[in-house]
Image 1 (cartoon, rainbow, N blue to C red):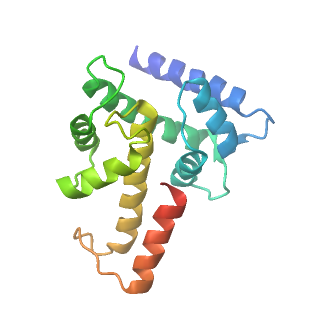
Image 2 (image 1 turned 30 degrees about the vertical axis):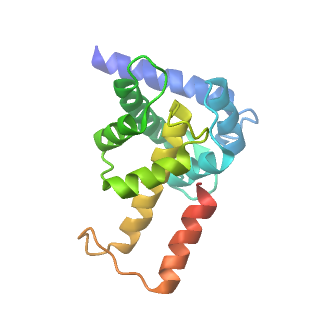
Length: 178
């Protein structure tokens, strides 16, 4: 039965992907993905949608094929589940809820670093994070983790950067996400 459910889910994803792929090219662009997310009431900035594609663009062609789309969908479902676990029927998360949800996903930052990031993603500056705010924050954290891991060659959880590397990292994250 579980196999049948997975098949149905993949089939539904395939149908959704094909609707989003309006030019029938077999891949979707950031703009196509942004429009599709907007249909689901997710107002994700184009820069974040572009980052989503970069995170899962395994063949590095700048678009997302179906297999890459499935991987992104899995990540987004994980974020949606974490969001719903902590939103308590309010439709939004408070900063402490965002912290708990992000820990559940696997992001562990100390409080000052976390709340500093939180401020950047609180679009309305009211301490309430809608699902799209939470997704944007998590995409930033995942991208920061990926960038950090590329410098953490010894996998010790620490890196040493020279000024050039630091500027590169700062520029990359500021241009691609916030």
